[in-house]
Amino acid sequence: MKTYTKANLEQIVMMQLENLNAMNDLLCIMKVQNELLHNVNKKLKDEISEFKEKQFTYPTGKRNQK
Image (cartoon, rainbow, N blue to C red; front, side):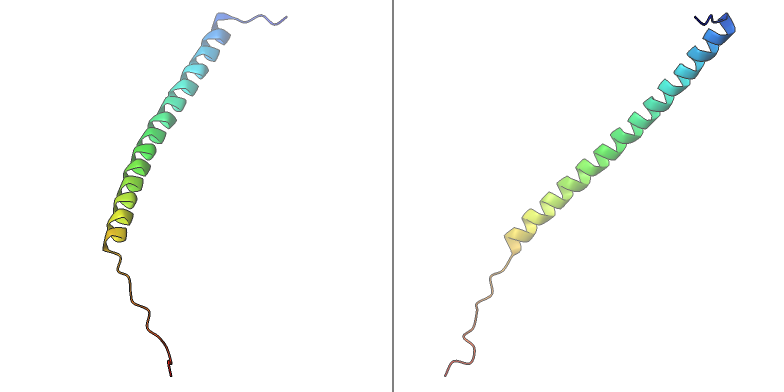
């Protein structure tokens, strides 16, 4: 069985706190990226809808009809 000193425990707790802060930073970054992706997807969806509304049908001509 390993015994820990107060200094060892403090070091472990500080390392865990650093890891938690790093994970929080990553979560914040992921939240911003998610919002950006959501906005881009919405814009793309709107542009596709506009394109479909403006889409023209071209008449097919009868080629080489004799």
